[in-house]
Image (cartoon, rainbow, N blue to C red):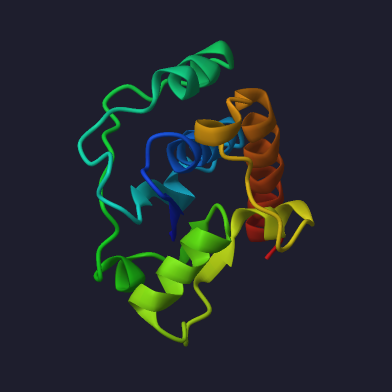
Length: 152
């Protein structure tokens, strides 16, 4: 089983969108038993809060249910628990490297690497208000990630 953790600042927009988009892709591919997928925050701002309403509505428009999801904080134990820990932007990546150090197992990656756009961030709708652009970034990254994982 491959365990994947998506990470963003507050765990209410980008990382839960990635979590539920990939869960949906995995389900549609009939691969649910092969993956464990979750998301977490690098910061405490939104802990315990549900998915941000515009993000939740975007997921719902695409037939994806994220009910019950609450923001949770990244932990030291996550590095051992997950095979891949995927950040949404360079700030997330800096915080991951600060928390986990040199990443000897090669677990830390940015989502846009999988979309063929390394170094680019997933658009943050908290600031841009462009939830559609975030959707496009997340779906491209998740599709590339799933493709890479299933080709192995």
